[in-house]
Length: 349
Image (cartoon, rainbow, N blue to C red):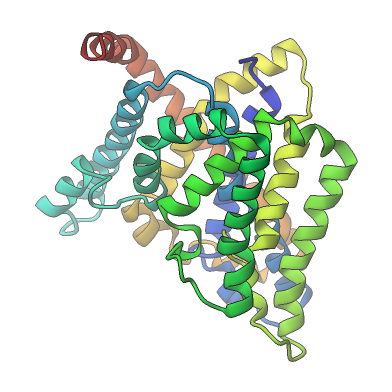
């Protein structure tokens, strides 16, 4: 399958957007801005613009992964990367925050999936072992049947829960393997039938803007007038407006074309995106560093506040990516990928 550098770029942009979400939320900025104000409006608009990041990242797995050979060594490499960072951050905290770290923290570090250190990683590990079955379903079902099934799933998981204000299928607002499986299937379906070819350029960008404004508009309008529903409900990974914005963004980036050198650079950097999440969202960093860290940005004038959020998010990504390049160099020096590949070949022979 030909590599799509635009989709690789979206993986990086999605992680930048995840950092924006965390700066606004856990970083304390949303709680610090007063309403009504331009600063408050801009922060909620930024949140809406970034909220589709997780859906995009999960859809990319299906969009680029379907049709590829199932490689168990791939998930082992991800697990090793996660443990690498959980052990390093836990050890740094052992010396930086006296009295905080105990044996339980190291147990969590060695078993990050079972102790749910990162919700996305835990859910992804579950989804990974369903991927061969999901790929087989996408490959063998007819377009008509696939379309019908995805339409029904979309209604059951997004539209009807919004109408009834309930979560009957326990998708947990998008924080569960169930939702990630749906996104994987959706990404694979869009790729197989080339549906995003009709959603490119200005059309895709306009769709992303419209659905972002719907998400933010419902929340901001609900603060001023009475609505028949909670306007904040759309700030949800499984809301229809966030899902639609993510599809538009995937279409926008899937249609991008880059030069050869730019494409190589994007492909080189893209794998580091996951580590941005692993570093800044580690439970210790999350609870003892990130909490309330960006609340002082609320003192800036509205345009500067929004720019500062984007600048801080970019800085976090750059630092984490640079560190991950060192980690990748170590893994290559140890030839982990080759060793795991050889072991996999023996086991699956």
